[in-house]
Length: 259
Image 1: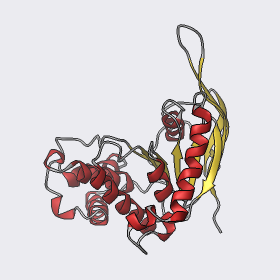
Image 2 (image 1 turned 135 degrees about the horizontal axis):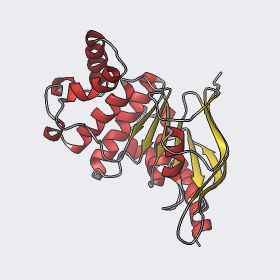
Image 3 (image 1 turned 120 degrees about the vertical axis):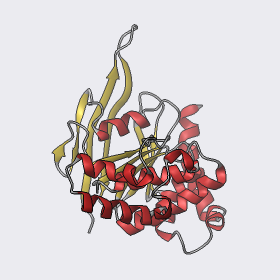
């Protein structure tokens, strides 16, 4: 039996501008259960990243509340790990040192830091590259290091802001498979923002569709494909009638509010 890990209640966000307040989000309500992989889609500027930044504790909501495990989110901490579109690794540190950096800042002893770095680099299949500098790796490999670095802090929820958006199509599909393996291995809860409806349908256990600004949640659709991943080739899944039907259902919501 799953239980709520994240509760977003009546969240509204307004930004100040020269012409007066601009509403980015309006009365957003969302409950995420432990172990879910929730994908968020919607038109550009609908507030997806703003919502992620609130969950991360980077900015407060103008109104409403966000709670993790029942406690209000007031500032960033290691319980909510963020993976950005660009890996944002420290170029002066090795791959292993990048992954161990968070535990080091939290005062974890050196031997334990090395254990954490090794286990998570093995999880993303990059332990053999531990002594490399980030710039010596491909873009996809750098993003896997970024995921390992976040997971080394053992967050309660993994926040991903279009993490594969800057990658080529083949690398993107490969990392989708990698993420599903990591998700199934760790059991982590994931909040994943994407502009790709196909990606959302394939990765998500639920797909949250947002309206244009001010962003509101139009619907949340259940999706079965992430839990079935590995049973057949991804392209076979994505061309199946069931997958196409879900993709079209999501697109209809987006098209309806854009026209």
